Image (cartoon, rainbow, N blue to C red; front, side, top):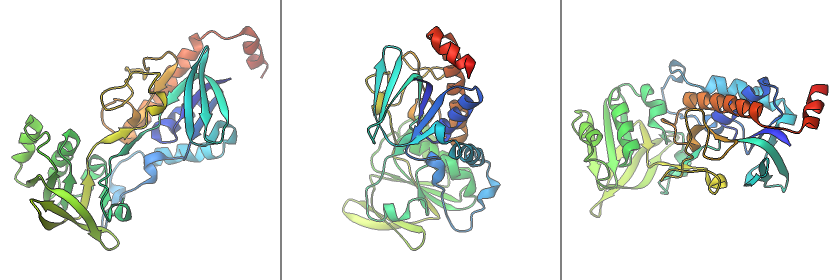
Length: 312
């Protein structure tokens, strides 16, 4: 039985794994890939990305370290998580089963897609799903945000601080009546196209425009970048029956990344933590690992197992 199993190879999961290794825990990282959302970088013409501080460099260093530690990682999808008398059992897609005293879920979240022609072709080439991550790059640029929820409104507010112009494509009235919605509507460089629906994404090497429809008529909106902010789908179904989740399916955690289940911790975008950012996920992963370590120190184990650990 492992001391700790970590699910997810993104910023939170990688950080948690490195911290656990440095605490000399018997840790196993199980993930379908290494790097998570940092593997997807927005590419747009004439943008100097090196001018922006981000967490990719840190994540890449952690990823490089993990890639050399074959004993500490399993590159597989997780298909089942179950509670055991003294911990948790994890089953992977290749039929293997693993047991652990403590578990960290850092499986991230997926952005809701538009589901229109051209979207897949231009993902991260002028079209992406996190305006807050890239807003500072678009000084005096033309930008578009698609969505009508709180996430979309925050994205517009962030972009409007630096961009020359922001067009909000709002499929419904959504949260436009909220204080944030009213604030966004009053910004001089923001135009809201309410009840407009995206029909397709067009471009060459990069996304250059979107076709939107309103009352049966279509028009084309051009911009330097397009941000889809329809919301996130947390990858939390694996532990749906084990922990408390909020209305959006995010795992509820406390300040120490503890869930409602003993010995089960969570970190990153799969949780209800504020802001889905790489740097925040790195910190949350570190906290989760330290909390799991403290839990294991107080967790009773068989004296024969302690003797084996001392001998090692």
